[in-house]
Image: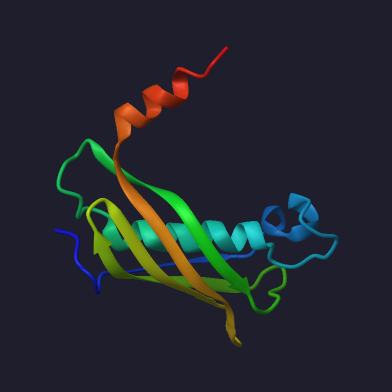
Length: 129
């Protein structure tokens, strides 16, 4: 069910909690790089939503190579687009881009892996003290 060409898009309004000054990734009141990354990941998830072969499966981010190209202020509308460009077994590769009303603000490549959700959660839970 997963094939190259699938596209996901999401949008958000830049809120105070998404600013570099709030996250600790800088002192400026601009859309933070970690917030950009989260938006790009959401777009990739949207591209494959409902298309995994089994309800017990999900995807997890495993690699990200992104350039944050331009700042966006508090209140700006930002949107991200992810296109699935390669499927290699459980490995999914996306071309990702983000924009505000004026320009492209980010671009790059994002990889996700298809995993069994319960099994991965159990591995994480086993690390609890």
